[in-house]
Image 1: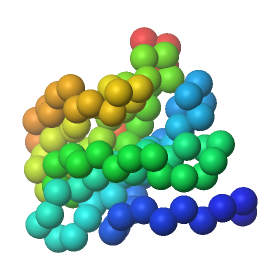
Image 2 (image 1 turned 180 degrees about the horizontal axis):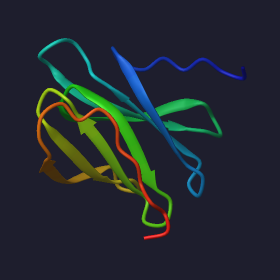
Image 3 (image 1 turned 90 degrees about the horizontal axis):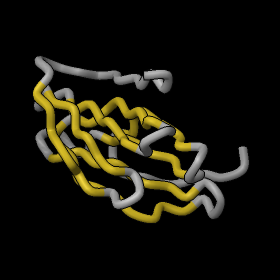
Amino acid sequence: MTATIPVGNGPGGVAVDPGTRTVYVAHAGREGAHGAVSVIDATTHTVGRTVRVAKGSSGVAVDPATHTVYVTNSEDGTVTVMDGPTLTVTDTVPVGPSPRAVAVDPGS
């Protein structure tokens, strides 16, 4: 272990963008509250920013080609789409009840 980095309540999924050396950690937050994604600089081991997303955030994936981040929100039945470099939420997509995991196919 090289570092312990505190993030918000209920951390779940972790995704790494190797091109930007950024780590994304989804955390659900307190029950009934909005979830968030902590954005960690893998070089300095510090949380640079925490981005609020929908309720029940648990899974996270990043497309290394586009640096797009996808976060599942189990309480809202959505996936949040976020631009990694700007940390701007670009879309929230309804997907049905209780999504918990997400993956990216870098070949497509």
